[in-house]
Length: 313
View 1 (cartoon, helix red, strand yellow):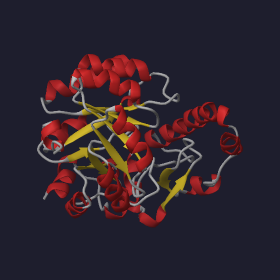
View 2: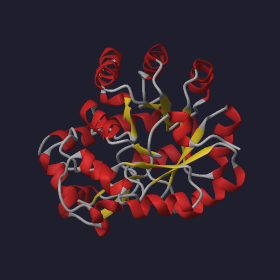
View 3: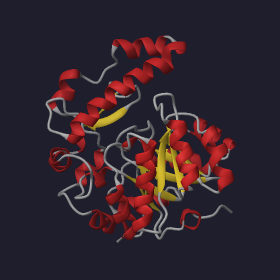
């Protein structure tokens, strides 16, 4: 029998505060740890590896509880190797990989006793990362904010549970204790929760962004491939409506030419992530706010600890 998530990570509840680009920060993580869950920060939230190292040290000065770092492992992240080196040297409690092959990460982290969880959206890729030695998968369902999958969480988790021997963490569509219990009933070992924490006092984004999560609902969330080259769920603001969500010339070229694909995808990602960064940190007419359909359940901007209570009680 496989070990439980809470035994491996040594946390009180089987819940991860999901790593969120431009949102996650030291204050959010330490509040989550104090409330009995774990969490992860994207390495890309720091412009240099030195800043990443300082953030890890800062969390450990406040808390001795386990937390992780999220690494983008494809070519769009030019700092990947140095970020991985910092994670290994600092012996972070776990690593979450996204958007690429986790082979190198697993090969370097596992011998150091660092669990590696890999984002997956289907069984094919999940089997690959299991073969590579991943500790578990983050099963990203269609209800996720940001880079969402194509299958509903029930179908995805049920399918993975029949075929995998490693841990399965369900991500997407989780805002309440009822949601947590439901995803665990599908066969998940733990859950990853993101969107609801954007509307927190501690989140590192603008008040406009946080308030948008209160003001908009599930019907206002759409998918676009214009920001990163992969499907991204965002709030359908007037700006998103004006630019549309369909494939651009670069994207059409990317799908026709496999050799160029990785380079074009990198260009789209760099350009799109800059637009998201501008919208997250300041008021701008070019508003691209990443969020999942669970904004339907967000009624106010609240402290992280209060949001955690909704997930565990």
